[in-house]
Image 1: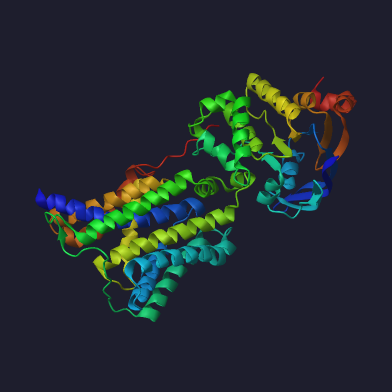
Image 2: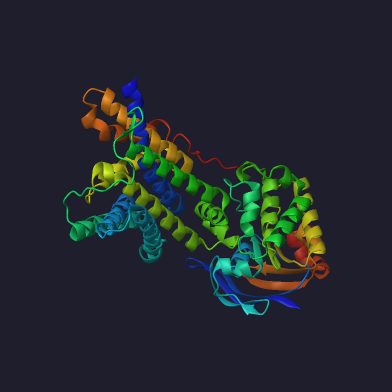
Length: 290
Length: 236
């Protein structure tokens, strides 16, 4: 039982990371109807920027907020410069651009910071806390991700800009007829998604160490979380992310040979959800009055 | 005073030209109807005014040329388009739908007043204010679309087939409220409607559009009295 609880908590900690990635994937998906395959590499690149700032001697929490802000600007910039011109291109062209961005960020990070594995510091107390159920970093990670997810929720739910973003994602033409500047709303979504990814990257880098391929498996778990929760539901993506984290961890420990099959569980989960409940746990299958 | 002046307006969907040079003026205050058969270009005319289709020509709204402006900028000048099929946000609540339309307004107190005014016109919307718009009936969605347009505090409302898909009783209610709005506030209306009898009851002026050009104009009485309009569009 002790082991079980411990593994659930550890699962929640990584689940928070998947939840963040899933949320950023869903936010972009809602706005432009496609997966942004480069989401993970954008987060990885942000994390390297944070690492560089830390290496220059800036304190962790300053780096944290500077990186989050820089990532926001970069996200907006990426949309305005790269995605805007192909706004009306076919789905396939857009996906090719995303895959291209993925390769560009990956190689760029490798070229600038090389491929050696780098330790990334944790701002949280080392060792286990209290009854040794949970490590200080895991607990800190859960708190930071939950705080950020709450902030995003409050922003989307109650602020005017959040309302405009939701409207622009649902029906761009109608949003324009309400005076919403749809391009800016979408750009804002890109900025937010990049920020969320950056925070996830800075939190997880301490656990998995930093190198350009750090997001390779995390993005798959993030996609799994998004699909499990439902691609049209930001809240669902968050719950899905946490679920995937816990399931992955429990399977890794309690299924014989599961340690090697962790990633497989994520993919099996994607396939199973798509087969039996394609709209996800919280997604709506679209029903229209005619 | 002239609120809207349209000269030589042409509009296209991809390569298909729908409007072939429309000219008309709309005076401030009152209701102007655009009559015409299916496919004559009525909806396109409204979409062209607020920049939702490719168009050329001159459109002057309140002294400002708007033919090359983006939709959201035309809207922010005070042109509220209630599109055919209503275009409400199904997954936002009724209140959120209304609040959204006040986004470009500087004056928060005015927006609050307008929200109360909309709920006074449409008590049904007030009852359902926390409900998702997708769960509303067709009539209620049309009310929401009109309410949303009013939240923009517009000078001009473009109404595209408000009777579309509604039961006769609901249509009567909605036209009653539109008449009420037109009488009580300073807003002007440009109404597109297939049901010509209904439109002429509400409007004081009317234009007839055929295959992309305006072919007839006059007061509602003149149009109603026109022999060919009577036979073709009023059916008696």
